[in-house]
Image (cartoon, rainbow over all chains, first blue to last red; front, side, top):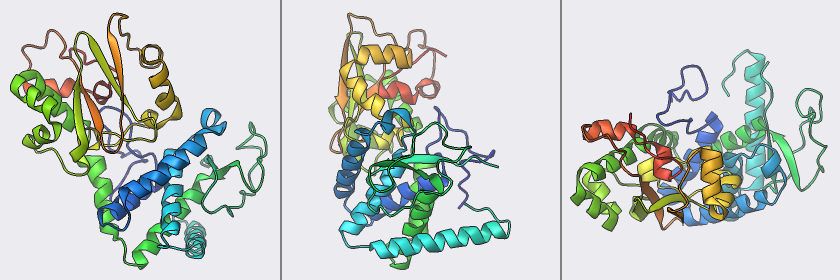
Length: 115
Length: 236
């Protein structure tokens, strides 16, 4: 996939800012929407989690004083709904994260920077 | 070396994300107090979230619930094919074709289909027109519902708590202070709260002095901000 959204070759957007700031934001968006399209998740059930999490985050002071990242909340909501539906387990996620991080440090060690 | 970006979160689904050992270090987080270690609000390195996204993707791929292609397609669609240029086309048509305008206000979904615009969640689209008496602005107070079909994905500020709460409470003041849009006192401002069932977009007023422009030229001056209602369309 040629998604250059952060580098100097990023496609300029008409009418302003980039849609996604980082590749992980676009992936997390794409995963959730693709799951809704294929019927694995219902858009409404995902959205309910999203609304709940956004509401919670806004009660915190950091929403006003620190970086408030919509897609971090989006990703968290996606985890919530996948766990709740039993589509993935906590253990699978934790093991997956460990694997990803191991692969990154391996890549860093061999001077590849892909994330 | 690139400065590490931290993102503040609260109440995660999985709360065993340890604080990065560099947290509280001298070069990144000088200005914040050390957060409680277990619950509440705390910053996590952005790379932690990126890792979770990648992990989720690979798990779902392994389970056969997703394909990389499907994700690519969604992302590319929203980055390249769907965006405010579609809404701009619709607006320009309403300026040059009164019958189309009437059809759009009556049934935005059907009218957009005439222009080949529709699809994902387009079934809930509603067009509202600015007039010399009424200025309209859209928001989603609950999350970030947005007329994706005609505007693509929302800009970041549309999703921020500040916009979503304040535009409802003091629209005139916020439009002026934050967007430099001065709506005269005599003009009514209507704020439309979008939901997943009803996604509004604004048909801005055609600027004076554009009588000689073609429909295509008109489309090129219509901005996303104007279709959200936080700007007016200006003569080129």
